[in-house]
Length: 350
Ligand SMILES: [Zn+2]
Ligand SMILES: [Zn+2]
Image 1 (cartoon, rainbow, N blue to C red):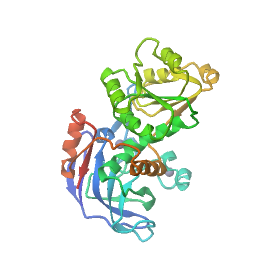
Image 2 (tube, helix red, strand yellow):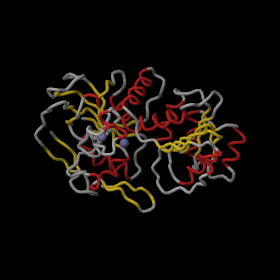
Image 3 (cartoon, protein in one colour):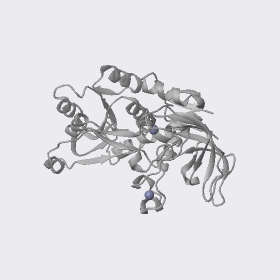
Image 4 (cartoon, rainbow, N blue to C red):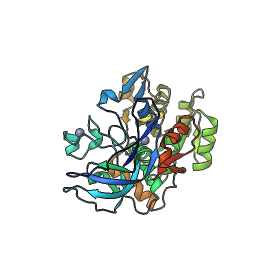
């Protein structure tokens, strides 16, 4: 087995060869066909996530040990199954849902891994898909992606379901005539924009401070846009739309959170999914007077991944822009991403 690994935090990936492992218990050995490269992979290679305000969340403090093979957006073919593995057979093509929990706590035993406090995310905490083989702890983390191109299915495991789950939370309880405001027309916001029109009849408005990004959102999705940094932007938006029922914030900075909350009608929901970071000062009574709901959203469930694959199969959502390159170029792909040379998503293929 050939894996592209982090041997030292902050250093380029190195390629190492190991004996291909044998699955035991409920494990499934997957031959990796493709694996997406994500912006998080850059943070994982650095060894920490910037939480804003000078705070760092170090992977070493989360029990991550090196060497680590990154890659949390893999698709592959089942190569071997452990004696207790159930639900897949050798030769099955599957996409990996990588947000695996500790598999021991109450949340994990309820199969609600996203609520686990000690996640063992594949490709982020334990070995992932920048390799020709990877081990999956249980077949329930593998989903059938037949009918969807492998590189597209790969990106759905992270960017796709992150956008999808946040939108679901925002759209929950929306009534006809309501407005959903998407904040941030960057990579994740644009993914969301491609998905949201298949999910709701609600009117979509997009906010971004960058005029080029607003123009792109208008062109691609035919939506109305606003500059959230304009004076009185929230007041104007409220007056013109009447009812912003939910905002989904793909930036997650203090300014965008404040803008989102200020734009909401009473009883509205503000969903934060962007990880810009920082801190928020908000008058507490505003929760009461506005009957406000503030909701965090992180990745999505296997069910979300299934639903997203179904939408794609039905032709309801356009594929995200993707370019592929050989798995052996994992480090080069990360360098290009870091240098801002990548448009859309890069997927490594074996
Ligand atoms: Zn990712
Ligand atoms: Zn757990």
